[in-house]
Image 1 (cartoon, rainbow, N blue to C red):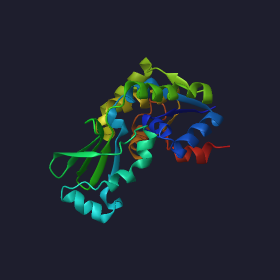
Image 2 (tube, rainbow, N blue to C red):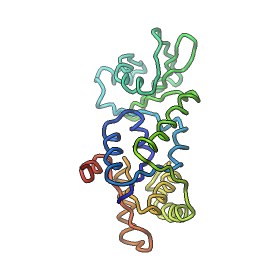
Image 3 (tube, one colour):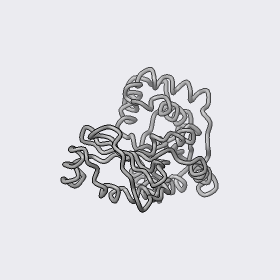
Image 4 (cartoon, rainbow, N blue to C red):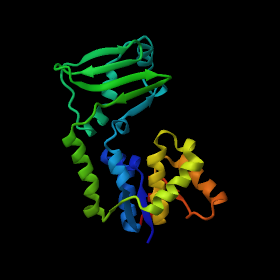
Length: 238
């Protein structure tokens, strides 16, 4: 039976109740074995993993004009309501806006000066950042990942010595391809190679670039099999 190792970004989408991530996990459970790297559980502690980016061309034009003028339209908060609810963030009735960097950065606070959202508009992209989650919220989300063991018979795997060796090869040849998360991504890829598992990721282009390179030039490594959540459902759902 095939194995499927889920990248951190897919697991985060699962926690956000994304249907494609949920369907992929269910399909993988029926088709084979689910693997989750302990690296992904550690990555969940990184606040940057919970940022939401929205290209300005997808926003209301008058909002973009106001953003460029240094004004934050509070209607943007309505755009993010679904994401806010999924993060268990309750916005106060009375919001306070503080401009941190003129024309580019705002902080949304409640009446007690507690940071609720961080918003930045730069280079045509709107980034919504959520403040660091309280420890109990993070632990609850991590518990949901561990609960996959019972619900879908998923297996939490450590990084083996062989996986580390494969990860080192990935970094030697594709450090720039992977970008800022190169080390953790390489360890997850290495774990997938060691398990001969499909790597299920949203970073489909980057990881397929590495897979093609390995297929052409590094025959001594296991075949790197990369698939998106949508492709997994199409190819393996019964």
